[in-house]
Length: 497
Image 1 (cartoon, rainbow, N blue to C red):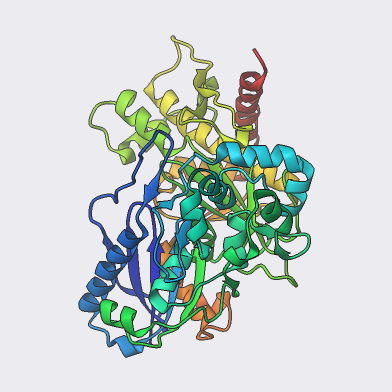
Image 2: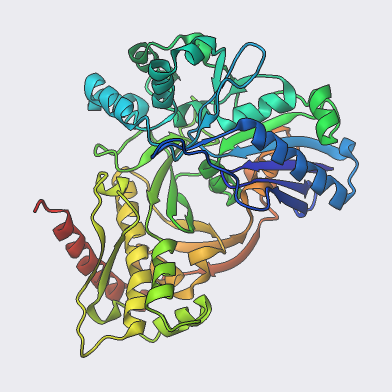
């Protein structure tokens, strides 16, 4: 018995086939092999053709089936993870009307900001838990104003995952989690946000039918079965955006649990057990995969732009030429906690929402020419990245999320012992590292939705825990002092000139 998971990213589409009994991935594949095209007709625009996602999904599906030599009849459920905040528009024949406006497209920022100011910040934050911002609803407002002929033909709007589910099954539906990430969900009244729909002039018929995240959301139809090599009637039983799905993949379901990634940029995703928001809108809050009207489970998402990109910059420009990341970590470990007084603010990759959309830039503070060497700067860079995570976690704790445990995949910055130990030391949280990815998580989510697993604990009982990092008590004060100094420099940088 097998489960099939898809991860629809902006760079590629990945498919993974998981043995439901063992929990092990038996085959995975991704396409295209080079990064997928992002169409940028104007500066700040970012679009992709949804048909290309489908073509790459077909290739990935065919590859895993050929590699695993599994009978399609043995695949019992399908799950979908997808790039968040995109907008796909289809007509009554389920034909795409224009390229999808994807997550990193910024054209709708003025529309969301105007809505935030006109409707009122308190109203938006208390009902939507976010500013309308640059999310899906604001992108639809842009189409309504700038492409009225397209807007008039729209039968349903959907997120990228909704589109893939439609292509698989012919059924158009969505989830509360998906609607919340698009700013279409009213958390106070537990329904579609009528006040925002009315403000933008959207008809309620544009919203697809709502299904639970873990439930049957359609079955593979004859056309898709023929194209993909799957069995007609195979149920689609799970879908979620990539960040909630990453948390699911790491078995993060309960208040106080945190999922984190630290690639080019970094994400801290915490689960909150009460409806709450940050009054300064420095983080985003969406319905988590297990959120229901009866059980509040909200995913609080913090994104930090300048994480791994700073570490790679240091490797290129500061570290000895030709050094590996592993050797760079060894060199950094020669410097003491706090980097002998150096603090680096890692915000050199654009405006940071965490800093109320300010663009402070990256800066290095406290260098002494007679004392400091490469090792101090390399360590200070990693500490600065960790301290930015800690600053965001402080915001989460102010919202009522007690951060006790951080789950992460053993990849990117989490490969660095120094990074991991600093994060555990400054937050006091236990860090658990796992071997998993989004498409495998989506497959296991499908197993929950199909009733193959009774709950998340059974689904992730076989999740391989690679390492546990406990916060060292002896060094807690040294980490606290280094963070306090870093935070003082950050506050100085945020003061008006």
